[in-house]
Amino acid sequence: MLIDQAPPDTPPLVGVGDDDRLRRVRFGLWQLVMTAITVLITGWFVTMGPIPAIIALMVAKHVLVAILVMGLGVDASRS
Image (tube, rainbow, N blue to C red):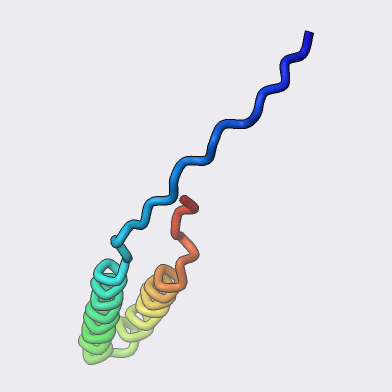
């Protein structure tokens, strides 16, 4: 015996005033600070000679790309 049941009513929509502007501003500032620190440390290593300069530039390249990729949202969780 089949009983036809209607689906439940949808819950009411609730407006939330919490946008992510402050979080995005903090993250942007964090990116700028980390980029500046990376560039300054790399510049300091460049003054030590050719071998430390090459190693510092190789590391800085990877760090700066990681900061860029984080800003693009590649690692963001899907919620």
